[in-house]
Image (cartoon, rainbow, N blue to C red; front, side, top):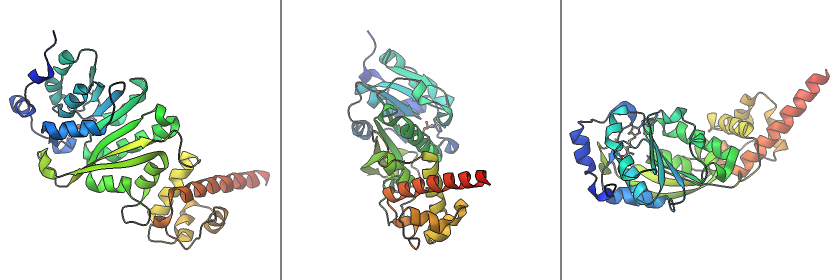
Length: 293
Ligand code: SAH
């Protein structure tokens, strides 16, 4: 008989017994309170028939909560010091738990398990944004076949940038890309004191629920290019900031039916997709006419 989950040692004792200290360079801030961990796992919704990826299990509190909810979990942890703390979970949940010592930035999750997949993680904040952008690219390519839900802890300021509405200070590239591909659900803030050791900032848990296909049709590369260029100089009028695209910005904005005196901040996701499509249309016709010369 495998040992029951209740027989696992308390997380705090485990950390102490293994004399592990949080490393700043790995963005290590641990959650040890079971009620908080269960709440976060509950935000992931039904996980029983899903394969759940967890980035950065650390001492494994969230991992335990996910396994207890019946998920099959693959955890990816970069810091080898934690492996002996979480390896015993393999015995408690045979065939349900896989542990990989890898850098999640270099791991192709889609190759590791079939859909339906979810990602649930208290992310290392130093790499949270590039990780999310990688997953959003996969969602752009495969929609809900990539992931059906991402339930993630970020520092609150980053969560706000993901969930932001147009015409707010937090609205920018992250909000536009996230909203183009997903519905974003805000769950809750978590004060610094909920973590051991406490980070300097407040945190927040949000979910991104991928759409079956992007909200508006556009090519990812062009979409990202126009969004990045527009927000690079977010205080400038679009007819000025978009010159950096290297084409006639006024013609581009006219083609997309966007007032060139507006700033990037006020454009919604639909307007950005129009801009990306016009960018494609104009760059294609430019290549055509130059090849005719
Ligand atoms: N989930 C745990 C720990 C969160 S702290 C908890 O809630 O208690 C972030 C974790 O991510 C740490 O365990 C850290 O070692 C790990 N980590 C940092 N960078 C990583 C990377 N690039 N790939 C995988 N894990 C990483």
